Length: 198
Image 1 (spheres, helix red, strand yellow):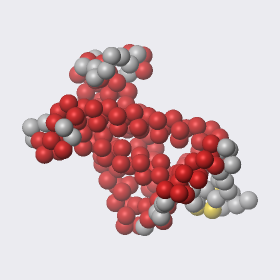
Image 2 (cartoon, rainbow, N blue to C red):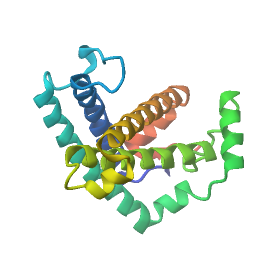
Image 3 (spheres, rainbow, N blue to C red):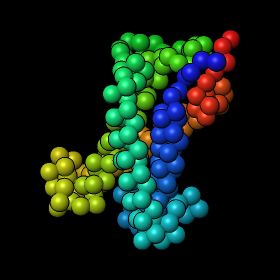
């Protein structure tokens, strides 16, 4: 048996999945109370029941995501996990792997090694979550976090950035789930952490 994912990586992965699900669905309910664009999210796919309830769910998930993310990043830096799994990465390799994936020819022989497309996607997801948290703070407390808000174009700019980071995360999750369906052994390794050799 080969170890693919350490225990802490697996735990933080599933906690992130839960936190993001709660944040996105409660965020849709919050968005519906004051939409940025000319559409609303269907109530059946939102969480919270009403604006106050959605805000409570959203803030609870935000702190869970932030704390869990700090644990993952700290572990990744101090254990060398992030450097080993995410670096190096080059635009040429990333484009080549994305094109190979679109043709169905991207190898998944060794799940302990990320290809360039995976590295870019995971690094992008980390940046999107950081963007969500910072823009969320600027929306929540625009006076107290004025410096952060001003870098985003003040309150309305922070709302736009928050929305587009959410869109990026939802797209990441959809592609991630599609890849798990296409390569189902990756799902089991994120539960057990191990993969049978051969």
